[in-house]
Length: 281
Length: 262
Image (cartoon, rainbow over all chains, first blue to last red; front, side, top):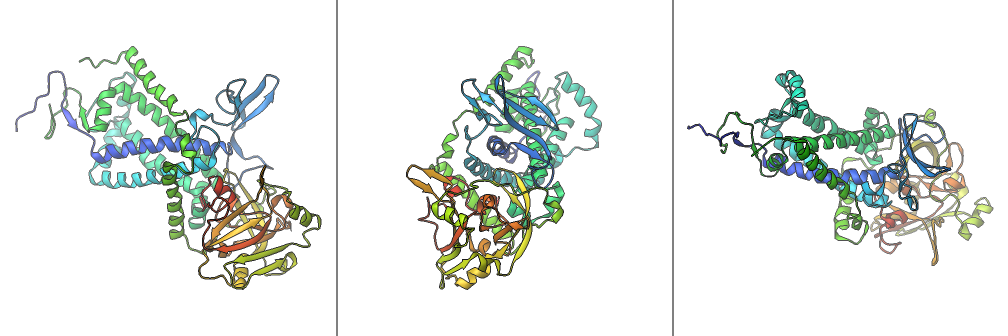
């Protein structure tokens, strides 16, 4: 076989993302968008989080609470986190304008619907919840069979040893576009697929009274229904953090190339990447 | 082609990506609140799937978790209506529910009517369970009452009955054209469930008005809006059409899912 030579100064064009990876990626992106915005709508119906089986109304087991208080300067938004009270006017608790303040925990700009409607929030949340879980199953089976999990997701010993160097490379915005994922990429995606995704589904199901009857051990696993609700919320925040970093990395690493690989599957590798069968120049 | 990431390029692309996020939160998805819209109709099918999936995996008699007495750490938080004002209810309340009867009607061979004393003298069950409000909070309390199932057997439910509709004295919404009364419904599996109590006791006291006196039905594997307070009639029906807006309950008519087990 003759050596394929890429254009000068360019690495080979490699087929990096299978159709399973690409389709599940975008379905998840849509699902998570709706799940987040309807989840915040649902949270707004009772914007407090607790530790334990129940919510303390006559005792205190709240770890987070968002609300509004009156002050001489008008209503103020207040957020309590682990006993510390923060003024979050404009963002949490009270938002909108001074003449037309809106008293919801999260502002309407980040909820679906944009006004209080718990019923609609729940309908949309559960609809996308089903699609999200179905897509997880499809992704897992396909990625197990086509080797995506083994090749790109589960970090090996070499990946763990390569973390310090990869951290240094990222800090200096030097990205290697290889055939497989780098150590930090593997760790990030492993955490999302095998920790955060299962955790957010399981804690969501633990809030269902029907599921509690079917699998009461889930209540014990997460330390009670209200703790499960708190973990569900924290996992959401971690997924949002992942999303922000994910977008920053796509932009920093070359948005056109990264987007193309997640739409068409084809990815321009770094110069010097050894070519293989199936590559394009 | 230069692959350099300059600070300007980076900031510009970040700003474009960021503006998409802000746009996302506007009101363009408010149309999903319209219960007649096709998108909403499709999405509501997911609730049917949830109901069928849970019924499939969960035994009909599987119990909701019961807690120990030490887990009762507070009173049962009253929610929704805490003091109905319908004339019938006010009269009953002022006479300490002396004239109250619970009726079982509809698709039954022997309609039944029970006074409060009769209900209190029937085989009783107490259970310490967790009440989960659809809003997200939970509260553990001890409920005492008589199971609904044997009473349905006394009424001899006809085979064509598919649902039990629970009618209440609760005028939860007062409008210009009159009161809207609270009602909800369940399938017969929940109606016959061993923990489905016609409860008259709460935390070893007589059930107070704020929690649904004289009778509140417990359906322990569902959310709080499936636990009708101020209950007066259980009606067996083949279809939920013709009650309210036909979605099976007051909150269901507003847009909550009928099953309420999630």
